[in-house]
Image (cartoon, rainbow, N blue to C red; front, side, top):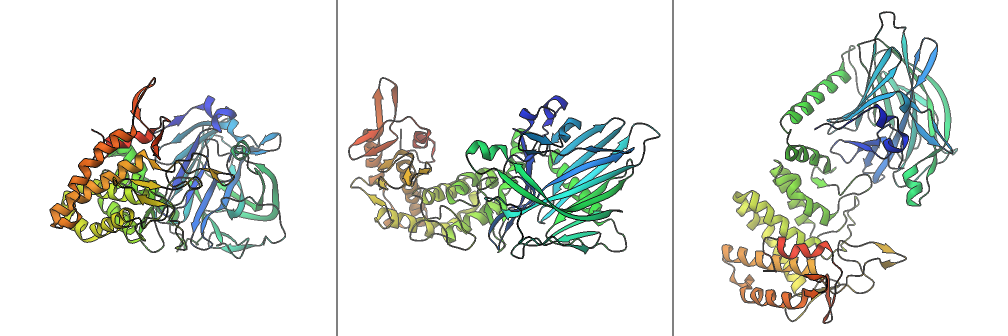
Length: 528
């Protein structure tokens, strides 16, 4: 599916800045910006690398200042925000933008048109930018492309300022240049396929502003380092490529390496697009962006772009749709088994850390693990042997610790339901904190925790029966729990009939929230 934005939309600053595109490569890296490539977030950038050391996402290449030199005139087609002004307002030449299989931008400068395309290559920390110019008149004058890289080289959560610690030297590399602004971060190689000149002229681009950060109440200005300028001769109808990567692309005997990489990736993506024209196919294909290959070779699910990493709860909720029901069963199994191996004292991590110091601060992630196993078995019924060997021990570990009161801030009551947290904790998905206190206190027995726990016990009961382990069966307890649940949570008042959000100490919190949907939507619903 393609999303095409026309000239009026592209040239409307207010509208175009609210629309964003993203490219990913399956390594946790991304390229992202607004529709007109004017960065509005400190998280935007053309090469944002998810590094192992130093851990986390880092904005390496923030943006490019680009222009065409035609007939003695310099025509800019990039844009960024400075105090009180947008500069150089390249969106005024943008005729059309396609956010389809990859971002495509089409510009017009009188008789000259320019197509600019961006692509991250899956499995490689490699950005390809493809430029192609065409003239509508036979006497179109020579065209020179000028590109000034703007570097941030910082953690994605931070901002940078001009500083003497940055190393401004530009080193030569095959068909390009190499930059290493800071020792702690990897080098950046920028290479060109075809003839070019690079004029080193180190300087700083001051006070670049990010409007979304200002709206969010965060610091929103930074300085970007500009090492110099590429000059590339453009021939109408003949594309040229500019790359950015943390590793140099080796070229041999003038072989068209970059163009070949581009061609193969275009064929792959167009083939996928042709086979996924339906909405379901489109969503299944787009879901691949969230599957990330870890440095150890395993798979993880990133909880969201631009700043989230891998979260246990989010991974488990999304996993069936991203994998088992999207034609990626092996990938889903890989992720699920990896999560199971991370269980500790009945808990699945809420937040995974690159250094292994995971955060075990969620009451429901382990219960979502049980649900994800159910979904795998439903989609792949032939995996029952795998479930018995690899998942059943994890489920028993979870039930033993939750039901035995061995999980911090989790205690079963006499009826078998779980009370979680205290006034100072935030252990459910509604976990925002302000001034050290939960924004939405939900300690006690949140409705979705009770529903998920009942579902976990009922599923374990069915597995124990199938696997011949009667000591794990709780059929009579489950019957009683359904009756208790209805008495505790069912509310009838002037608003109608609905479920309470939290049961606590004999009373209920009657906020109407989506959490009550889990009481009837899980495989083993606790509500009739």
